Length: 376
Image (cartoon, rainbow, N blue to C red; front, side):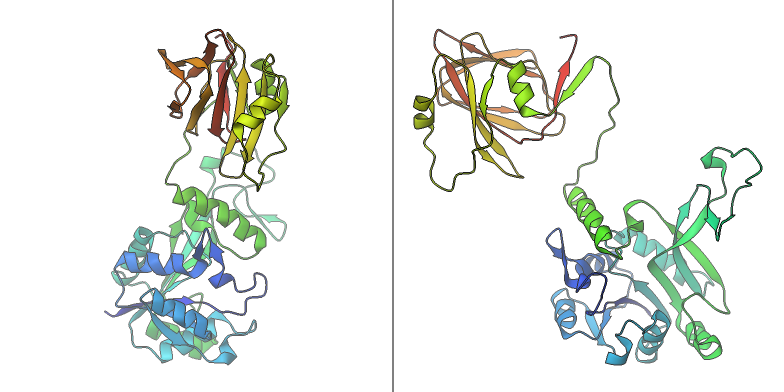
């Protein structure tokens, strides 16, 4: 049974101009679904269906085929029913699986499972849906609850399925028959229609600019391959992020944290000479979305409070003087020229030792959480 994938993509989208080639976390939006389809390894052929030669070039660069649809089927008025009928009339197959580029987080495993469900069954149309297990209304009337009765826990409500649209499957002949009979084939017409539930990131569908912004956040999170660990409120724990107040509590009250990011070379020794050696002070040199670097000058016996960072590694360069580090209960003395690395999650505490001020360059990020135990 020949099964092909069709990825419809217009260049002339209006709500998000050129959305299919817009970069999402540095990658063209359409490339996400193309790569997932290839990785699924369940198609005889994969086509990008578009009027745009640019999308044709992109398809070729991604190693898939290109079907150039007529320009008349690329306007806002052209329907999914119409361009799919045109595609099926010009490509041999028994089953076509439509993959939307606006659902970039559908996985290869989901595509494979969806396609196997379609191919191995007697289904004529398979629709991807997102189940909503919450009270739902349609035209002001309840669907899955009774307004005159106590609402049960949400997990006991009958789920309501909404089209996810990212994946659609049709048997070619049934689709074409429905187009002849009803001038519509997308929803299944006469034939066996079933539904395939997607969940999580796979249900994200990009229709407008706000959707794209949310997808950008999701893409950056997924590319980091790091799950957020569960954490809970603890009355004995203090979470601090505001750097000026953190420094003040550590005894550093003179802080220049804003005149940074100079495009001219900055000389650390000149900065030290310009500040009072008898006081504690800080001077931020760099502050970007990736990291920050801050000079911290403290007197003997001063340092910071024991804390850790749950999601961020940091490192320090010792500019002058001597410091005692306590990292997870293990103490080590460091001096000028040393570099100290602090892995995320490790409790650390530093104290200037000796009879002279000590200076360190803290390299981290401005918005990193500092976790303190109120009980010490």
